[in-house]
Length: 262
Ligand code: 1HE
Image 1 (tube, protein in one colour):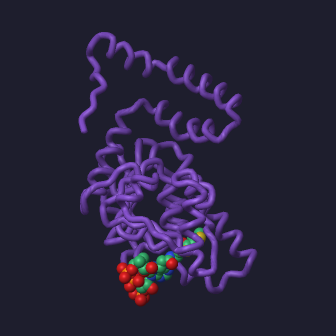
Image 2 (tube, rainbow, N blue to C red):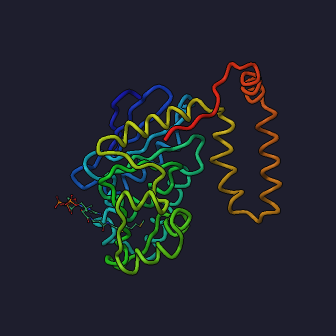
């Protein structure tokens, strides 16, 4: 995968162990057509083994205008189900892939674009970012896993309000209610997302794995199962050579302390 390689609707770039995946249909506001979903699926299905984290972003002024509405017109009910399932399969690879994914958001993060962003693990929003679920206006429904993932971020009531009334949220409100974890100035979304992704590269791989694979499943599980899963994951992680050497480094005063600055 060469630096700056464009694979159909995606722009793929490398920054060390970070893979940057850019939605690259600027003229269509990065609307997600079948080709884009297939390219994302392909990309997340065949990640090079030296990729340790991913930044997902959209070129141009908008992250994504959601489903390419040009694609929907000719689809019958059965084809519609299969189409939705193809998004599920693709976004599942993003959420439950081998490495953490940071999404950098600006402008429209709407419909299927919001569903895609919700499959990432961390979201960084520039001040221009806004969130909408215009499916109600279009006479359709979310089909890219939004009814599962979006309520986890903002709750069922807020999602229902957005879909029933067309309510939108801006970036500042969005960080308050859980759409993004970070809010940055215009133009700073991609650099911030890259900086976060590089920090993740510095984590133990097994800890990143546990956060991606175990944490959301534990959070969804019956607490009795969840506590057991947590104990198992914790003992697997802390028993690793990597954990032992990191803890030893701290005890020997060779590792950084935890600090906080506002
Ligand atoms: C599109 C799409 C699209 C733009 N499908 N072509 N999503 C929506 O309902 C959002 C629809 N889009 C918009 O509201 C606006 O385009 C934006 C707010 C995102 C951007 O506005 P703007 O003024 O920057 O761009 P534009 O002039 O509206 O769009 C530029 C071109 O992109 C134009 O095409 P052109 O041939 O006239 O140049 C638009 O038609 C085209 N375009 N958005 C197709 N979405 C798995 S289910 C998920 C369900 C959903 O995602 S529903 C939400 C769909």
